[in-house]
Image 1 (cartoon, rainbow, N blue to C red):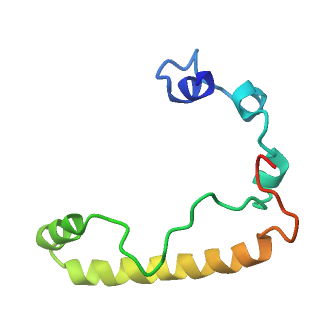
Image 2: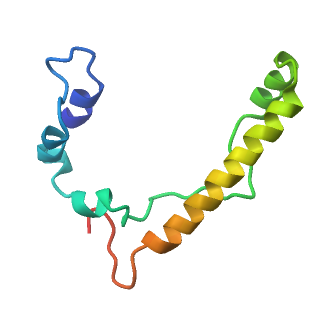
Image 3: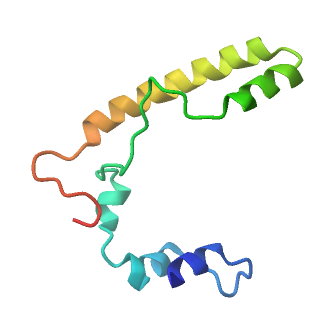
Length: 105
């Protein structure tokens, strides 16, 4: 709990000031920092790409408020698709092989 408070505190004198301090926190002692930095850690949750993961009300409000909503949405969807495809290819390369145990492993 103390590590979370140090990450979220407003006063910079009481907040972590370096990665080394974060890594030394007792609550994070089990994290395999080298695996994390090399992106060899499998995420705890991967959202289903075929399902909506946002509030549809937000989309509706955006369409009402934007002057050219469909134009912006088309650009955003293309950008997200490009990002997702590059993320998929990097995950397949960086995913741990047999016996890979994850961060706390």
